[in-house]
Image (cartoon, rainbow, N blue to C red; front, side, top):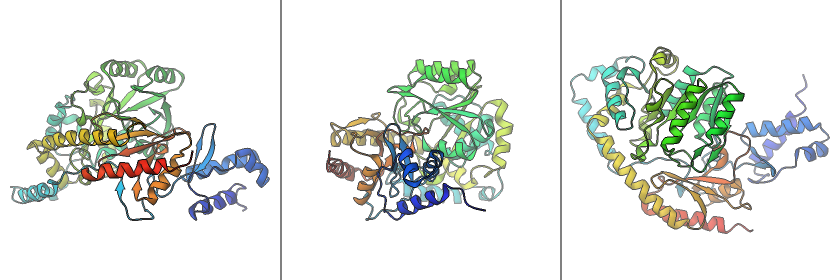
Length: 444
C-alpha cells in the first residue's frame, strides 16, 4: 500500500528540522506556496503542517505563518531538555527547595523508622489513602478556605495525578473542557490522553473573560471548566470575589463541573475564598505539595463532591491506586507538625524577594507577574520570535518556556514564561542580566 501523499513531505521536513538544517524560528513557506512548490494539493500542504505541529516541530501563528520550533529547551510539552553547552540556569520549571530540607528528610525518616507500626507502611492502603491521613489533609485545607470532611479528600501521587484522576472520573471522550486561552500545560497533555475537546476562553489582565465563557456554554455543551483562580499559571492573576461568584453562578446555570487548581494558592493567603467554598457540590479541588514542600515526593490530593467519591475511587484503582504509603506518612507528618506551614512562609518570602530582583533586572520590558509568584510572563518585541530566543538562550546555557507550551489554541503569543526559583538566589540577577543581553543582541 502506498503511503499517504503528505507523509514523504512530513518525513523530509522533520528530518531537516532534527538535523538542524531548518533552524528554530525559521519561517516555512505558506500553505499555498508549499502546495505550488511541491505540486501537491492545498489540503495536502495543510495536512503536512498539521502533522509537523502535532509532532511538536512547528508552530503556526495567526497572520504570520508557520515557524520551526525550538527543540533545545522546554519549548512545548515534550521537548528535549538537553543543552549544547553546560547548563547555567533552568528558568523553565518551578522547583523550589530550601537548603535545610535534606536534613529534614533524614530526620523524618529516622522518626518514621522508630515509630510504632512501621510494618503498616508495607501493607496495601485503601485507594485514596487512610482515613487519618485524609483527616490531616482536610485540616490543612481549612487554611485554604476549603472546609471538607475527610471522606471527600482523596490522596494522589501529586497534583497532576489528582487532575488526571478528576478528568478521568468526570469526563468521557469527546466532552468539551473549557480552559483559559493561556493555561497550565499539563491539562493539555491530559486532554489529549482522554480525548477531550479543549475550548479556550479568552483572557483579560485580571482573569478569564467570563462573558465569553457564558457565551461558550450557551453555544456548546461544556462538561467542565478548568480554572486556576489564585496565582494563575502562567499569568499570575488572583481572581477577585466578584469573578469567583460569577464562575460559581455559571457552574450552576450551565450544569458545569469546576476543576479548581489550588497548587499555588498558598503563595497568597489574602486571596478570596476558593470557588470550592462557593459551589462545593460542583467543584473538584486539586492541589499537592510539590511547590510548597518538594516535587520529588509526588504527594497530591483532590476534594470531590459526595456523589463522585465512589467513582473517583474506582478511577484510582484503575491507575496507581493512590499515594505510596511511605510518601503519605512523610507528607502528613510534615503537615501535622507545622513543617509545611514554616516552609510556606519561607516560600512566600523567597518568591517576593525573587520578584523584586526580576523587576529590577527586567525593568522596561513588558512583563506580567504577581509579586508573590514563582514566575513571570515576558512579552517579546515583534521582531523577537520565541523559538529563536529560546534557542539563543539555550546556547548560553539557559532554559526557558515559550508561550506555545501554555496555549491550548493553534496560535500562541510572542512571550516566554520565566520560572524564577531554579537558580540560587544570588545567581538570579546575573542569569536575568544574561537573558536581557541575549534579547538586546537580536537585530531589529
